Image 1 (cartoon, rainbow, N blue to C red):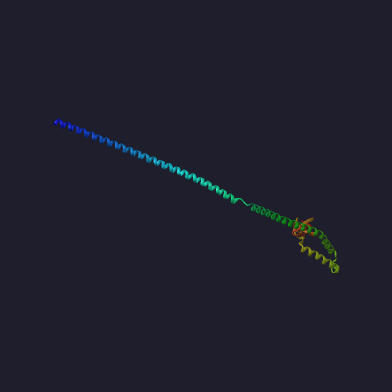
Image 2 (tube, rainbow, N blue to C red):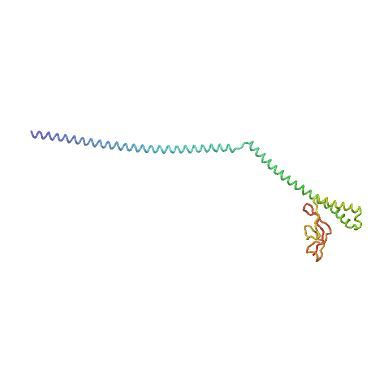
Length: 233
């Protein structure tokens, strides 16, 4: 009987050990499966994250490319618009051309007018000087004739008439700008005087005009005829 119980106990113990071992193996299998599942989930999550990053980078690249294309399109439109603004109408170009031509013609005409006025003034002055040079000998003859009249005959009507004509000549010349050049007692000036004689005179200073042989005249600040003089010292 004791032997029978011992065998049953041994069987029971073996069964318990088998169950425990089976349970342990099942638990270990479950643990391995859980670890494998977790690893797979991590890998999938990592793969998902990488895919999301790649997708984001791809989206960013696409956005940048779209921005570049948009900028290029905008620049193209701007250039086109700018070109349209800068492009002048043929009518405006013609107006500018005619305005420029008119401006140049007006400037040329103004220069021509000034040049003509200057030439006219010069011609008038040359002609006036020529006439004055022809009149001055007549004045010289009046002066010589009046200087030759004796003192006792100066009261005669004829002499008085000649003197009045002479004074009228001088007045007319003065009115048109003809002035006599001062000579006697003045310092010799080669721009105004023509020295034809020299004399030593202690009463006069150096280069002082002692005598005038022919009166000189100026017209508009220019010399018409130099004074013919004698210079002392």
